[in-house]
Image (cartoon, rainbow, N blue to C red; front, top):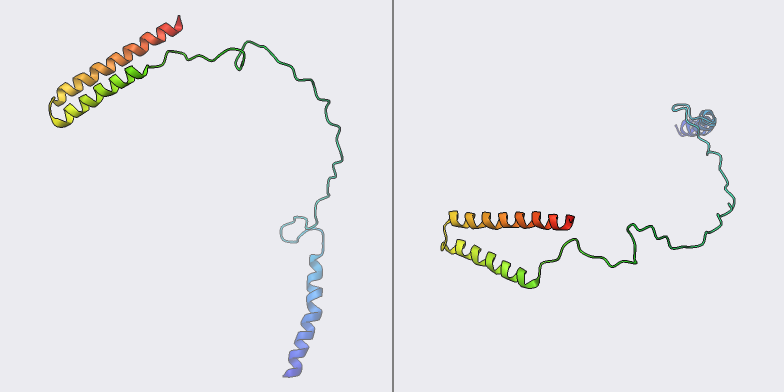
Length: 129
């Protein structure tokens, strides 16, 4: 029994290299893809382009750092913001406490939205001039 185990081990050691010798070709037998590394491409130093002098181009188009930036329209003043915020807060509190009806609240909100849309249209016409 011991002798047959050694014999099998020896036969396996001899047979394995013979079996694997078929895999030493340039392509893998099952996929057909090469098993060797691709040819390396060596790139040497390349001449750099000659740098051009830096010049300022005044094309008259954005971006131009020569002109100050201005807003398309005037911004809301802090006093206007504070008074509008106070009005809207007062309106919300009246609705919450029940001092005004839901219909009155919706009427006032609709009036404020209409005022806002008319103001936006007026501002766009003023900008277009």
